[in-house]
Length: 379
Image (cartoon, rainbow, N blue to C red; front, side, top):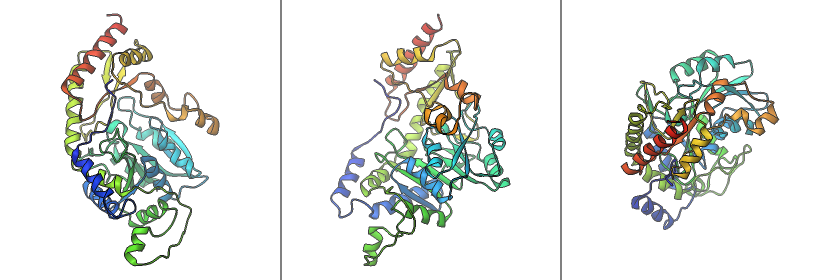
């Protein structure tokens, strides 16, 4: 089975982890600070706060913005559930905006329609690795006095109008899950230019305590104070060492993902029933996912099953969040709220894409898609 995504590790990654295992600090130590600085420098942000997952990064961002009961946060309908869950964690209400069916990125016009007197923030999702239109989103946020958050968990290494993802919003969140561009096993990061927001998130990830063990050791002090209710969202030195090693290969990984995407693009020109998502000229795509839309005369479930039988680990990203039972029950959301996301969801398929895919793997995916789609279309 060729999976839709997987980690790429080498001996340098393993050695980096081993060195930490032999050191005095396995967690809350110097590697955390080193990883944060390297990451901030990479994306052009002043601050980076390492946390235990992309979900923790989103939650920390909502905490930093003081989202609370009665507040609304606008999120795209087409995303992983964590983008909306982080709002609910804080007692707020996610308000779903529809997406552009050509890109599956949030439609700025739909965002502006959903703004009310209780809206506090807008979260853009860089779906599949393509940055949203941040010029327009930032203008909307500025005119309505809203915070702008970039859920960039798909988009590390991407750029928008030449600026790196991670520097485009007030708060930018990342994931280091194994299928992402770089991995720490599990892990996440929040970047910002606001030092006060960063300070609050560092406390939040450490139970709401103002200092961690490493800081107290350097100060020769035992004293600490809990100033707010936080979580244990810390990232270990073991994971940060792996992240530092992985960051060195990011540009190579992005280039390999783009090469695979280009081969897919060229191949699917000849297959009318398979349409890649549109990519803006203003972006450099990170291609966490390679998503295609199938023609309406194909049964997506049948195509999915047949490709899996052929060893092609296709997937679907995602069911619109407002259609999940939890959100339908809690908030009364349902069909018809975001028609573009709902209609496109029935047709999308994610094909395998990861840096260690061989040319043979890519050709196998293309030929399998060609065969299954033509059979499904009755050719």
